[in-house]
Structures are given as C-alpha cells and as structure tokens.
Image (cartoon, rainbow, N blue to C red; front, side, top):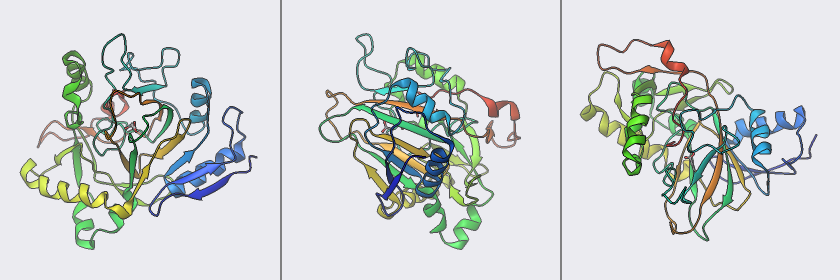
Length: 306
Ligand code: SIN
C-alpha cells in the first residue's frame, strides 16, 4: 500500500493527498484509503500527477463506471472517449466549445437523469494567474439551515434546466439545439441522502429553474437565498491550480464553479473523467404531469457544458 499523507486545505472541505504516483497501478488498500479520505474531505487534490490519458482513465475507473461522453464526440479526447477536454484552446481554428465550461455554481450533469457521482479533473496548462475553481460543501449548506427551512425543503423537488448553464448561448446554434433536445428539464430532490455517508446534502444550484409545485416567481427568492447561503465563505474551498494537479470531487455533496478571472488569450487546458452516478429524478413535463419516468433516468447526457 502507498504511504499516503493527507493534509487539510480548507475549513469546510478539501485535502491534499501526497505519497501517490498514479503512473503506477494502485492496490486495493490504497484505493480504499483514497476513497475514505474523499468521503471525509469531499475534494481531494493530488499534486504532481504527470499522467497519460490512459492512466487518468485507469485511476478514475477505481471509483465507478465512467461517462463515455457519447453525446459530445467533438469534445472527447480523440483516443479516449471517457476523457472530456475542457479547454479554451481553439479547435480546428475555431473557439473551443468548452472554453467557458462550468461558469456558474453547479453539480456536474445535474440537468440529466444521471448526475455525475464524481469528477476527476487534471490540469495540463494554466494561465499565470486566475482560472481557479471553487467548491462548496453542500452538507454544511443543509445542516446550517433553520429547522423550519429544512422541513420545508425535505421532500421538495427542483427542476434543473440545461438552458441555465452560463454561457450556453455562446456555443454554436446547432450544438445548443442538440443540447436542449438531449436534456429536457429534470426534477430532482432538493435534499439528497448521500448513499455512502448517509448524510443529507442540499442539491440545488444556479441551474435550477424552480421548485416542483411552485411558480418561477415563488421559487426565485428561495433559490437565490439557498444558492447564496451554500457558497458562504465558510463553506467554500478555492483551488489555485498547478500543472499536473489532479482534483477529484464528490458531486453528491458539493457544487463548484470555474472562475473566468484570467486572460482568455492564455491557454487553460484541463482533462476530465466523470464517474456515473445512480439514476435520479425524472423528466419534468410541467405541473400535473410530473410522474416519474424511469426510462429517462438512464440517459447518456451532454457532458460538454457541465
Ligand atoms: C467543470 O465544471 O467540470 C470544470 C471545472 C474547471 O474547469 O475548473
């Protein structure tokens, strides 16, 4: 077993794990120790991992089946479909469609019937300053609400809508039409019970349109409160990237945002593997037509915008 050192990076979440070389295969005990640290700290930073896409995929697979990114062949790594290229580097002379990925607070693929369980993002190039990613602890967000607010939210569902992905309109019209076709609005529980820790986590983000049974107007002030509350300073860890950092986060208990605070003419080039989560939620067809639709929960989804 590798001799791991785990060092906390933030009050709310985040820890650095050293003593690992992901160019080598990992044994079961090492993976179990990483998983334990992951469940405890929610975001792990594994620095100095100069790994190939094969090694990135092999390591990620220890934590579950990977999303093959079937719906976005033009963002997949040419040889490794499980690797999503999140980059502002032009593709065939055109602006990359993933140049503004993740610009509002979200949990990956929440606008699908199969939100990602986890994500592993590897930094290959970064600007001199900026381009950080912030993460929020959604257990804390839930646990610090008043009992009456928790009571109101327990059992409530929220409609996640891909059209609320910030910057979606900057993508090509054909792609946006395809993204919308593949991803109709999805209703998910507002409070999730984490299947591994048993803890309750708030599951809202800036990609939620409204609560099921409440109008947009009724929902808006509550959503605004919840999304601000969840990202209070004391619930957040901000990661400043170094090349070859591999950062893994648990989407079931966190949300994150990729900051645009950098010179966009400088490359920021990241590679991401997403671990498939459990099927969740149902296609929301409007009030009075909200019955669960199991077939919708196994969809392959558009990963390029998450
Ligand atoms: C993402 O939202 O998955 C991308 C995050 C980042 O590029 O920092």
